[in-house]
Image 1 (cartoon, rainbow, N blue to C red):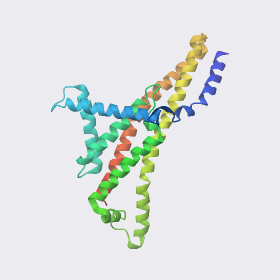
Image 2: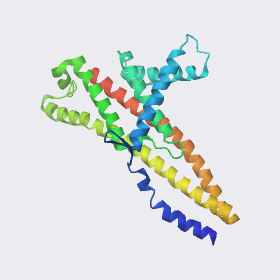
Image 3: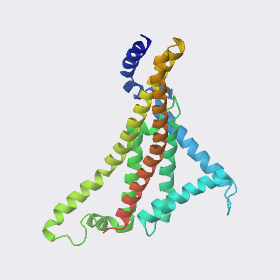
Image 4: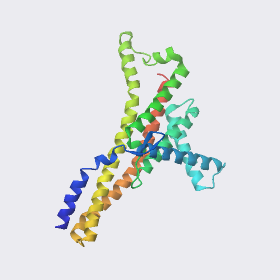
Length: 264
């Protein structure tokens, strides 16, 4: 039966979905191999720079252009909902950094939703780099604000009993160090899982739809329609996830900045 054949084809092809997310060199520049993830990382960076250049040239006191208004709304969202609410006093100097993180991750995630494209954030190397940038940034400002000794003391909050200070200091210090790991793995894991599910649904929709059309099998068309609606739902969900992951990464970075410069 055509539907059984389609199911067998789906099972056979689904076994190779994981390998489609492997990092593969697409070309080389002066002996440096560029993977598809590195390529899409630079594409995302170029898109963000283009948005800044185009949006910055059309800034107005009262925006009349929808494109410019959307960019300004996004920047104000980062400024008010992430910077002011999370960091508090002295937040303004950190808004350019947080906005860059937010928009870069958002653009990279959205690019990954284009059929055939890859999300740069689906590579652990890219998310490690982003997490490391955030890690260096908040530690730098913590040291700058409090000094080396003051920053080291901040890992033991006020009010901790003297005998517990070494233990609490050690635990707080380890917690600070592993932030780079949690930032990287959280973003990578969520994006890889979401795009893997999209790949499965896309494959199932394609195979059952081809079977229904080329073999004129109405029975095979029923699961094709079901898979299509599941795929549509997942695309809508992943669009939301693309925004949420950019928001979570930016707000966690803001939280770490706040903890570094305003010790408790």
